[in-house]
Image 1 (cartoon, rainbow, N blue to C red):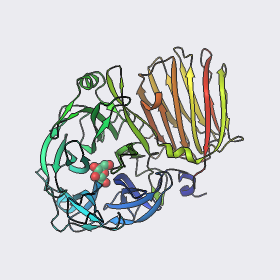
Image 2: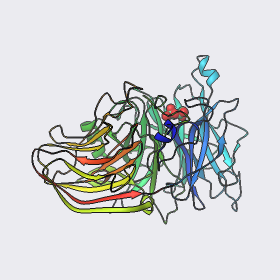
Image 3: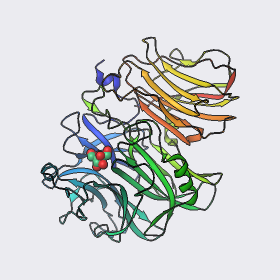
Image 4: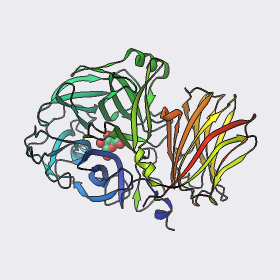
Length: 497
Ligand code: FRU
């Protein structure tokens, strides 16, 4: 096998060729999920940015489409979003054939090189054929640069509560909130976050949306705000904020201010490989889910990973929910239910008592490169519970719970390919444990080159990629100091073409 096929995921989206970073412009329309992405088709490293395009009926199997947006003399096409303008507020289409409107950042590389500050501005484009081809608006940019160097990544949302379009973008150390009635003329409404959450590097790729608190009628607003570097385990990561929005200003929930005082920041994913993720627009009310996908890499090493023809994959698409747990709001994320359709084989074990190192499943029973595993851990003491995905070629990824250090962790240093970057596996990635120890739910999605661990029903998530030169052949758990139990073990093999 060439490195290409050895490392090409089985069921995570990758571009056929060339470079990919952030997901962009995701919307749902007429039965199709659209995914655009930061793309440089001519090389496997970052370069003049295009918007690549892919479509899917279920967010799991993707068809790569023609490139949607090419750079031009105004600049590279940086990250942004797209909405279905159902009421034709922009006038680009008609009520019968509503336009899809995209907003992106023009990054003027020539200006940037010449030392200017104002090289990023916001521009729009529209599609009258359901997102397949695009026309750039003739009077771009629609938002000029206000003399802020980092001024990018507009994310638009229809705000049905206040009957307006809203848009958030990252402006240096804050999120700026804009509003509009027609997607063309934008008014600056407010700024958020200057002294809140993780800082120290530019903010990037925000997303801002209303979401119902699970099990209630209460509505809150969530801001996702990526930062690079500054993530909890180094490099790129996405933090979130919970509060209220009056149509102009986003105000943090009191309990969330306390959470920030306690934790500094709350992270959507504590692993190293989930960045710049945002949600799909135009999901029908009858569905009502907040559907998310992220870029499964990290700026620390994204352009050094050992693939040649293409680089980077997306995360498994996830449903985000907001829960209130003892007066504190948390986002939980889990793989979308569409993944379940692809289960081709299931192994069930009602109860495993772990009193010695135990193989939970191996390649004699199931294909180890396409798994969705779930179990509940019971009877935990102050100990380390170490799960191992490994092969006889001495590759091993460890993850689990270190109860003494009060953390979940992933350790990928014992995988064959790590030396391409000092920052790839130099440290064990950790996430604070907030779960109740009597019983911890664990779900693990394993592909050829990635592991996504959802602890505690998705309250703490860790996503990391790995590059093993031989397929993994077993999933096991090490012996702990005292016996414990794995209950309701469900091992699903996924067959996705
Ligand atoms: C985030 C990012 C965005 C920018 C894009 C450029 O990963 O830096 O802020 O729009 O990538 O490719």
